[in-house]
Image (cartoon, rainbow, N blue to C red; front, side, top):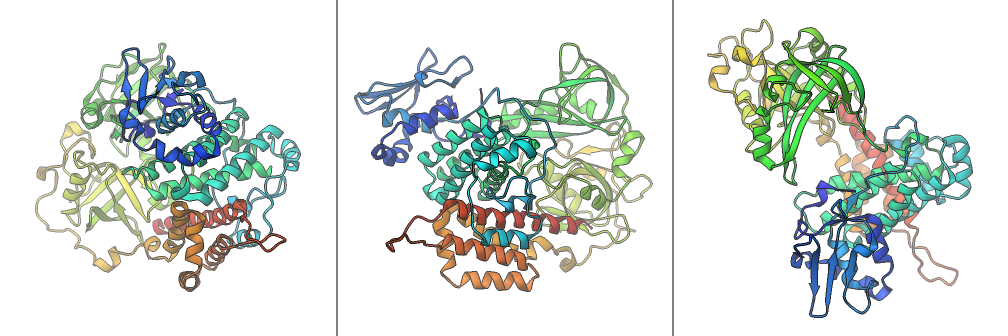
Amino acid sequence: MSIDESSTGGQGSVLLPAVAPEVLAEAVESLSGRLRKKLDAAIEGCAAGAVRAADGSVGVRFGEDAVVTLRPGPSGVVTEADQAVCGCLLAPRCLHRAAVLGASPIADPQEPAPPVPGPDPVTGPAAAAGPGAAPGASAATTATTAARAVAGPAAGPAAGGAEGAAEGGGLTAAQVRAAAALWGAAAEALAAGVTAGGAVVQAELLRAAHTARIAGLPRAEAAALRVVRGLRAARDRSAAQRLAELTGAFRELLYTAGLLASGAAGAGLTGAVRRSYEAGGSLRVYGLCREPVLSATGYGGVATHLLGVDGAHYSVSDVRPGGLSRARGAGAASVALGGAVLDHAGLARGGLRVVGATVSPEGRLGAGRGVRATAVGGVAWGEGPTAALFSRPAAEAVAAMPAEGAEPGLLGCDVRVVGASGDHVLVRELTPGAPLLRLAPAHPHPELPHAANLRRIAGHPGLVLRVLGRPDLDRAATLRPLAVGPVPGAEHSLRLPPEWLGRADLGYDRLQGAHFPGGAEGLVPQESAPAAGADPLADSPLWRVRRLLEAGVAGGRRAVAEAARGAEPAALAAALRRAGFGSAAELAAALTAEADRRPRDAFGRLADASAERYAWAWLAAAAHLAAAERSLVAASWA
């Protein structure tokens, strides 16, 4: 197992080793009901007293009579129950042991179950079909269908779906049962929200995730682990946690588990197991640009983007512990690939001939023992295979990218600078009728030159330049540039040194005054602010639905029910319908109604409402919101 980097932050977590999810789940499950109620309080602060011994074990003392000792295996991870022991009389079913395991980072499984081949579907409104759909049923494709489905009875994942899945979807009965268990745990976690999603709720998710792993559902397992880590970070009030990210993690988990449990999913929804390198033969690649890599967990480095003669995208990365200083220095570090004698700065403007190449599914070039690489001359942007990057409008390139589920690729375009808008640069593509685009820093860290370079560019309205970057598909018409260069034949463009080969890496090269044309003669005046400020995504009332969904994640079902009892639901529905989002209004109304539903038993006593019905309603609204926002973002590029 390997430690998940995103979970190594927090108080004391540097000392505590990572713990396998199933070990933590088993420890919590063995507690009595009385001790489970005390678990969250016991977890708080217990990691601060962790002490590492000379033999590599970690001890945490509870008072005078109890010491919990963690002895991780060779991988540095606690993978077995007997690697976590406590000296108290109730051990191993004691609160102390479960608390220390609950405070430890969660490890990723090293060897997931074998994958089932098949295409990977795109997350979207299909989730509205819910886990109660009949085997082989197609997912809802419109918000109206989703609203009708939510309004109807919510049948949980039935065992009968396993047979249909095995016949039509290619899934086994065990996989359908595992997905159904994960769906149920996810529904309970969503109903609880961050406020009530403590260690017990998280342990139920981890138990179901482990079962999904055994059944060969790595995508569902990974989604569950992301939700657990997000709940932990939110409860710890981690600065790195974003409520929007946790909301997206819940949507992915419910979509994946629900569709698998229904039997309507294809085998591709099980996910990929291992992103191994495969033989790529002989390659000739040309450098495009460098991109700094900096994580919140102390890792830093560089990724150099390359393009093959056939137009395929590749990259060579060098990321290691070291943080900001490593990210800044790695741009000039030597390339560790097949004995190539050049650094990343040279590779970004040069090329490689690679023999015996190994390539990951994401296009990363491996440095295996049999790989041989020789440096070759580079090509300027717009020449050779790079010409295709700048040959079509940006809107067309964005429309051809996957809607969701994969990082967007690089695109290039020629633009004219309009002016500044906060830390963004407003530009307009040099094609008739093109919309305004926003250039946003690819990395906001102040010690990296992205933002400073964009500020310099914004100070030259009318400047034309060539941009290579990655579109931000979560924001309207936003491009995060990695490099810029002059437009061939343009008089008022960048003037870069010849050794830069017509490009400046915004994360490493710093633009100076000498790199810009002198004088303002012939420059196009800045456009008016009202036209520059239009943002169809921000101006739409969909933010009200987003706030409702995030309130449900933060405060659970109770928070959505409270919102349903005031005047806000009527205002939300009216605003959505005025803007033409009638289906969104129906889905939001169905969600609030289900959240506030209070069923009674045969004796008139209040009974617990179904968490699955609520999760179904929440997922339908979340799926529609994601699809609607993607449509607005796509329209903003046109």
